[in-house]
Image 1 (cartoon, rainbow, N blue to C red):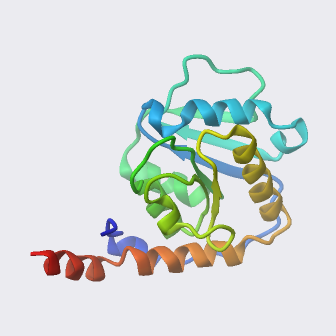
Image 2: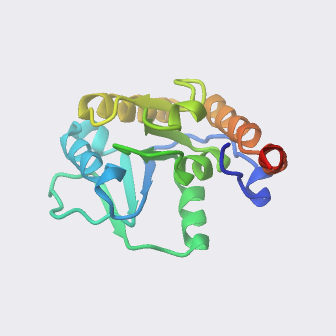
Image 3: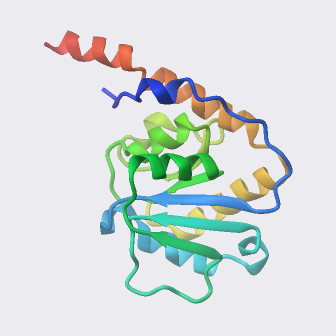
Length: 191
């Protein structure tokens, strides 16, 4: 049974895209190796310069042991309040979830509720939520080449102004999949 999304996230409106020159990526997790932060940093540092100049990355909760000097524009934050994280979701375009192992991460639910493009590893319950290229991108776990390809595809799609359909699909999918009332009814049936 999926986690429920809070009702206040269910009714968020998704704005149409405007021409963007800088795509904002967010990665939010605890500082745990299974969350894939080191993989994400590795991939960011190895992306081509052309794509790096079109990205701004915000990383919440994860602190790499070393920070490469060839990252795209990247800011690191410690844990922040739920309100600050909500604002970060609102301002972002893409949410990256590079987990090596995960069950059904809240970041996927939250980012989809905000109508963001999701790039996530195909582990645990994530493929039950994300349907490849319908409402997000899945990559093979621990595969830096596949993750880099998905980041490039998502950034290019958004730069071209073609992300609205996927964003709306993500919002619809999570509202249906993680409906609070549906979730409660499914849990009550178990009792």
